[in-house]
Amino acid sequence: MNWIKVEDELPSYDKLVLVYECTHENIRTGLLYRTDGKGHHWYDRNEEYSLDVTHWMPLPKTPEL
Image 1 (tube, rainbow, N blue to C red):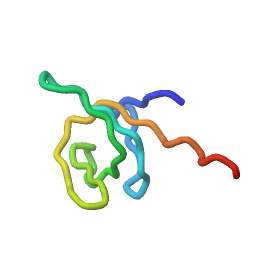
Image 2 (tube, one colour):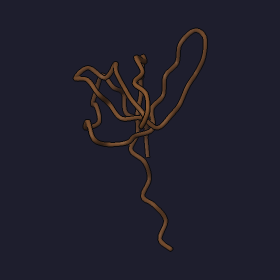
Image 3 (cartoon, helix red, strand yellow):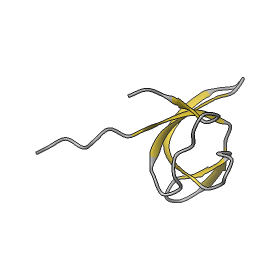
């Protein structure tokens, strides 16, 4: 899987994805859902964040047991 630039494509609202944010202070990755039309607001199951996410990627398929 490859990282997708948010300027090229955004994930659907209901899809949990891996996100990447890089600022002058830190680099952060996490599993979040998108909540707005521009990709600046994301949330996990408990809290909403205003992040400058630059890239995202779908999660891999779960393993077969």
